[in-house]
Amino acid sequence: MKAVHFGAGNIGRGFVGVLLHEGGYEVVFSDVAAPLVEALNSADSYTVREVGEGGEDRTITGFRALNSAENPEAVAQEVAEAQVVTTAVGPTVLKFIAQHIMDGLRLRSADLQPLQIMACENAVGATDTLRSEMERIAGAQWSELRSKAVFANTAVDRIVPGQPAGTGIDVTVEPFYEWAIESVPFGESRPHIPGAHFVKDLGPYIERKLFTVNTGHATAAYLGSAAGHTTIAAALGDQQVAAGVQAALEETSALLVAKHGLSVLEMADYRETILERFRNPSLPDTTTRVGRQPLRKLSRHERFIGPASQAAERGLEVAGLLTAIGAALRFDVPEDEESAQLKRRLSEVASGSLTAADFTAQVTGLDEEHPLFPRVCSTVVSSAG
Ligand SMILES: NC(=O)C1=CN([C@@H]2O[C@H](COP(=O)(O)OP(=O)(O)OC[C@H]3O[C@@H](n4cnc5c(N)ncnc54)[C@H](O)[C@@H]3O)[C@@H](O)[C@H]2O)C=CC1
Ligand SMILES: O=P(O)(O)OC[C@H]1O[C@](O)(CO)[C@@H](O)[C@@H]1O
Image (tube, rainbow, N blue to C red; front, side):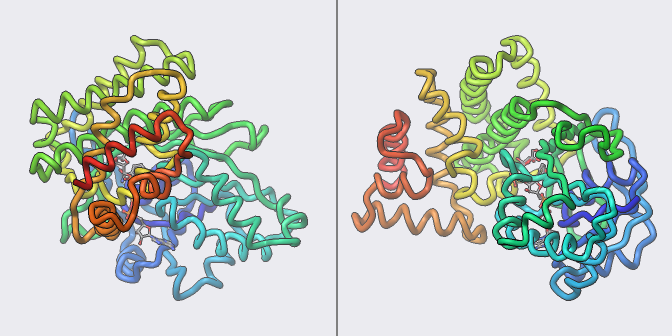
């Protein structure tokens, strides 16, 4: 069995690649980082080091790597012959991956089982996004190609921090992981991934994960960064930051309880478990990594505006989320392109060349009529001033 995995970075090597390998797949990594591709091809194995309670080392073998920028034809050929395709490249990169998968489907024999495609990104409906891009590229050809693939959304959860220089292709990760995959698209022929679990309705899983793990982590990063902390551990050691994270998460939990019928106690346990994971003293993680790409994180269906808009629609409390949004707006990391862009646009608000309302609409995608809009707009005004 063969799986082509796009994105041989932290989550690719440290999580998705591991579970595919343990499921018996040969993993063909596809990436655009030439040194990484070379390093993978010159090794027979790499180690995934789980740090923290219960962690163990896992040795991953049976992989190869291809450079999709230099050798797109070879990537298409691998896709044409594979059983599974996965991605962990970042939601904004999916549009580039779509072309490679389309090229592979064109070469794929119609006699093979449909290719099983799963995007493993931190976003609601990432596989749907990938499929839409593929449909757009295929145009009229889609009707003849669509039967060669099945698409399932997934929710992936494991903290894989940036890897220190000099560690090669080995990856340090936390012991915890969860990979939930929509079962319905596969019918009786699910991919063989024993480490994953298949669920009928992914909605509650992805929202519980994105609006708790990711909202909480990003809140710690933004409040921590605003308070001058560079690591997540230091941020959470600061009582004010910890209280801010708690406030934001109590609000998202209240939404999840109201929307998905999750129990209050279950959510309290879940919050405690993830806060414990964030505090893992063996896992070096930075506010810069966890807060990366603030514009993506402030977009309409992401970890802040997503839950805050739904909470506001239900008349639930959102003050803690608004404080986190304010800190996200002030996230100042010059080497992060989105942070630099955010800073430039906020300075336009301060100078009066962009209205706070236009800024709010453009960055968050909220309609002016939405009940959350005026509150975010006031947060923008305070952050710009
Ligand atoms: N690191 C983490 O703890 C977690 C990350 N995720 C999600 O996984 C995705 C990847 O995150 P990380 O692994 O942390 O990032 P990363 O930056 O370590 O890895 C991304 C990889 O994608 C490659 N890439 C970029 N453009 C590409 C292209 N056009 N074709 C092929 N490869 C390309 C990069 O060279 C890099 O190796 C993101 O969507 C993230 O939200 C999800 C859960 C946990
Ligand atoms: O910032 P991104 O790209 O959404 O992904 C990283 C996030 O995912 C996580 O691993 C949680 O699943 C956190 O480490 C981090 O908050």
